[in-house]
Amino acid sequence: MNYLKRLLSGEKVNKDTILEERDAHLEYPDKAMYELLEEAVLKYPNYNALEYYGKNITYKNFYKKIIDCAKSLKTIGVKENDKVTICMPNTPEAIIMFYAINMVGAVASMIHPLSSVNEIEYYIDAAESKYVLTLNLFAEKVVEASRRSNCNKVIVCEVTDGMFYALKKAVNIYTKVSNYINKKKINVPKGDDVIRWPDFILLGNGYNNEYKVKARGDKEAVILYSGGTTGKPKGVRLSNMNFNALGMQCFKMTGASAGESVLTILPIFHGFGIGVSVHTLLISGMKSVLIPQFNAKDFVKLIKRHRPVFLAGVPTMYEALTKNQEDSNYLKCVKNCICGGDLLQPALRQKVNDYLKAHGSDAQIRVGYGLSESTAACILTPSGYYKEGGLGLPLCDVDVKIMKPETNRELKPNQVGEICVSGPTVMLGYLNEEEETKKTLVKDDDGKVWLHTGDLGYKDREGFIFFKSRLKRMIVTSGYNVYPSYMEKIIMAHPAVEGCVVVGVPHPYKQQAPVACIVLKNNYTQTDELTSNIKAYCSQSIAKYSMPYRYHYIKSIPKTLLGKINYKKLEEECTKKYGRTK
Image (cartoon, rainbow, N blue to C red; front, side):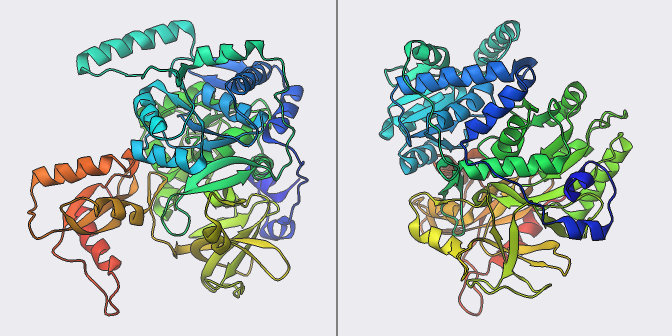
């Protein structure tokens, strides 16, 4: 048995065994994602694949729904290699569509449903997407963005589509009453370019032509969006092999078994969410319990009800877990806890471990390191072998080197340099960004491709990898990447703004929060009304989750002796004024 599987299942293994066995190898099939899912369907047809608000879907029925969706995609004109945008939270329809897109040989472009109209338009245009799936809650802005673009069809789901009839009816009544009280209305635009999910699925009933495309592992399958190394939003092009390799690696290392459940809380537009919390489970015969919106108050209830075998989340989620005052052993079912999306501070790690133990679990939280460009996770801290500040060891078939920045020269142990990754989960490249792809994916003298992550760290003599800082400026808030240069460009387009620098400050719940440091033009004065105006202006182009936490007005942008922006001084100033850790 592989050392990580033994460790993560709770077995104690000595350090020498870990170091001897870390070079485990897996055989990866040259198949499409849906073909690996087919194998799980054949093995476990009557196991539950998905659960959504108490309603279960077996693997057999799940696969049938994927086929129905694939036929409907062909009916509306989706061709091989077309891009189909999914702008959805975690719902059955989103997962069904994800695999149906893959089945017809198209590419799924995954975007955040809280994105602004301008951002959605940008993502649709960048991918040249002709079709979009979204939720009725976001339909108005998605349709507006699609009509600005050259998009053919918007498919609209309702959050209740995958629920039991009785629950669906209750939710619809509650929504109507809530809308009446708050004087809000969910507006789904009408037109030939808009179709409801039930009507869309019916379209495929008469389709009798071929709809399955047997694709190679290296074929592009998914686009995720990342800031890359410059802060400009980029599409990360990922293959079938990328996702299949990640799924096989993660399942092998969790010690989990077919039939066991996991809460899919991490959003599907995030590599960690769609790769680890969805695809890994569904090619392994496990059950994904879909949670469209995380609510800290319901966390204990969800764990008690579904008894997940492991938890996968970001520091914010685990912080929320420890605040629950439950006094039972409700975490006894949890064998593994994996934390990604942001650095886990030592104090929080200990706090979570103490909470797990006090509530019946033998698990200890482990850090998972990765990025969209490596299909999420590529490094994991094994249980029983934690090093203070360490990220862990590479996953199966993943190589990690520490290189001198902007070179291919590997550094010696304990020397700080750029973390570079090679392996089957490394991306194909950036969408429409040939030069940036060349800078990020670099071949060495042996022809091996290395992903230059933009993160600084070092490797000790035992191969344990440590993170130090980021080469690129980036703020991580609630597990999401926020890119200051992108925000600064938008804010500086406001007529009252002369200059702007965005920095991150400590936040008790989000870990970090962005603060916009603004220099006003001479004929403008700081007022509450102006701040409200700038805020409204930002909301048109900046997603809700990445909006500035505070607007800080300064007379001028501080510079270093070399004439560069003094980010450190601004960070210290804003942290003192706005930062909070409690």
